[in-house]
Amino acid sequence: MPQSPSSSLRIGTRGSKLARFQAELVQRLLKENAGIACELVIVKTSGDRILDRPLADAGGKGLFTKELEEALLRQEIDLAVHSMKDVPVQIPAGLKIAALLPREDARDAFLSPKAKTLQDLSKGAVIGTSSVRRKAQVMRARPDLEIRLLRGNVDTRLAKLDAGTFDAILLAMAGLKRLGLAARVTSILPLVSWLPALAQGAIGIETRDDNVAKQVAPLNDETTAIALACERAFQASLDGSCRTSIGGYAKVEKDRLMFEGEVLAPDGSAFAGEKIDVRLSGDFVVEAARLGREAGLTLKPRVAQWLAL
Image 1: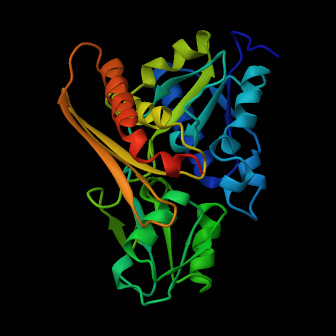
Image 2 (image 1 turned 90 degrees about the vertical axis):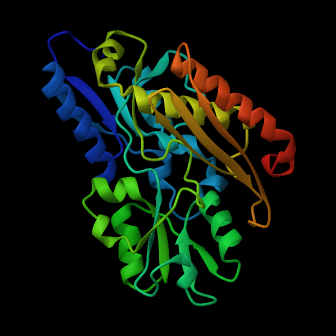
């Protein structure tokens, strides 16, 4: 049913602890900043149901957003809260990313009871991840390690590490910080040598292109919007499959945009990248998107063999 003016807004979210935390953060911000009451609506996505194989084998990124977007289009919810790294660059017609919250730590974290860093793991150690990017990065840094599939929510992954199923696992720092689990981190993988997923650490609010979009727009963080415009345009211009190992990170300091992006061979044996360091002018979001797109198009011929997999 359409939203009536007197009722609270319905926030669609996945049911994991992290997804609920992010939705509750948006709920609280809308109440505190705009006096808007909201209720949570749990939506189970394909990505939550498929746990026995890599997401790349089941359809890729949209598995965490498809059902939420369908609920938006059916007007069963009024907004959806996403981890932006899970959001495909093509948004369905009639929907939009109406706001981005200030970005959390975008880096990846290394967790292990047996080694302080990835390099300290013994030869043949078992490391868990579900990410094709992280797998390629591990194989680039440590081709002697054994990489096994690790799916499930953060608690499930930590439980498997604690049970000894894995010698180490890789997770996003942002999620661990939001869940109060930063103390579990053994070491942090530095951005200079280990690029994260594009848009990692950012929370997005998706709405129909209606009055709700205007209501949530004041929550938008401009710095995050500029950085993600660059990163998502880079991703879109490469047009890689869900099996493509792509990493990148944009940093914004006043009018300066610094970006580095890369594409890796699936086995980590080779990679190629592009960098940006410029002063922005005019509409910073539009300009950042243009620069990200140009970086991707410049890189694309050099990585075409990995994008087509």
